[in-house]
Image (tube, rainbow, N blue to C red; front, top):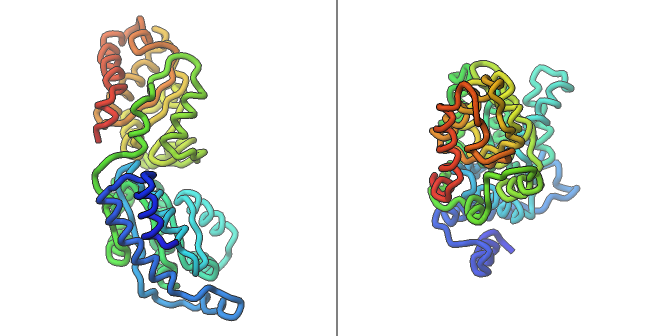
Amino acid sequence: MGLAQSYAALLESGKVKPDAAQSLVISKLVAVSDQLNQFPKPTHFIKHLFKSPAKPDYRGIYIYGEVGRGKTFLMDLFYASITRLPKHRIHFHAFMQDVHAKRATLKSDDVIADIADDLASRVKLLCLDEMQISDIADAMIIGRLFEALYARGVCIVTTSNLPPDRLYKEGLNRQLFMPFIEWMNQHLDVIHIGDGMDYRLGRMSSRQIYLVGNNISEMNAIWDELTDHSAGESIAIEVLSRKLVVLKAARGCARFTFAELCENPLGAPDYLALARNFRTIFIDDIPIIKSSNRNEAKRFILMIDTFYDSKTKLVISAAAPPEKLYPTGQHVKEFARTVSRLNEMQSASWWKAT
C-alpha cells in the first residue's frame, strides 16, 4: 500500500483525525515516495550503481513544528512506504553519536567524505528524527556531511521542532553554521507542519500531572504517553560556552530529579536553556525543602519562574502539595508566588496553551 493510501486508510478508520497541516506534509512526502519507489529494487547485479556519486533529481524534506504535531508519525509512514531502495531511519542524536565514533576510528585526509562514502554505499534514503544542534562539533560536522550525502545521491528526510534558521541559535561561533542553514533552505523542501492540536498533550486531559507521594509508575506512564514509549537518551546542550548534560531526553521532553536541578549549581541561563530546548520537563522526587536549604529553595523558585515565563509544561512528583513544599525559611514569602504558579501550571488551560 502506498503512502497516500495508508494515510487515507488511517483517516477512514478514525485512527487519525483530519488535519490540514498534516495533509500538506503528506502530499509533499507522497511526491518524494513516488519518485523513490520508481527506482528498481537493488540486486547483486546493480548494487554497484548505488556506489557511484550522482546528484539526485529529488529534494529532501525538512519537517518542523511544535512537539506533538505528528512529525515523527508522518515520517515513519513515509519510511514504511519506501520499498525499492535501501534505507535507514535513526534518531538524530544517535546518528551523531555514530558519526563521532567513526571519526575516532577512521584515519584519512577527509574523514567526513569517507563516512559519506560508506553510508551512501549502503542506503539511498536517510530519515533523521528530531534534528537539534546544541554542540559546536555537531554544527561543524553535520553541514559537510549532509552536503556530501546529497552529492552522493542520498535522499535526506528529517524532523525538527525548529526551522533551519533557528537551529543552534545563540550557539558558540554560530556564524560558521550559517552557510549550512542556507544550504538546507536551498536543497531541502522545508515544511512547517503548522499550528494545531498537540496530539500528545491531548492525551493528558484526564491525567493528574502534579503527583504527591511515591508515584514512579505514574510518572513513567505519563512519560510513555508524551514520548511514545521512548526510553530517552543522554544529550548535552550548550549554555554560555559550557555543557549542560540532560540524562534523559526524548520527543521534546526531558526528565530530571530535584537534586539534579536544584542541588547542583545551576542558574537562570541553565533553566532558560532547558525551557528553549524542551517543551515538557519532568521533575522527580521534589522533597519538602528544609529552612536550612536556602540555596535549593532559591534555585527552585528561580526555576519555576523561568519555566512559567517560558510556558513550559511540567510533570512533577513531590513529597507534598505545592503549599507544603517549603513551610518555613528565608524565602517563604517569595515561595508564595511559586505555589501560585505551580497550581496554575497544573490547569487544563495551561496545558492547552501553546
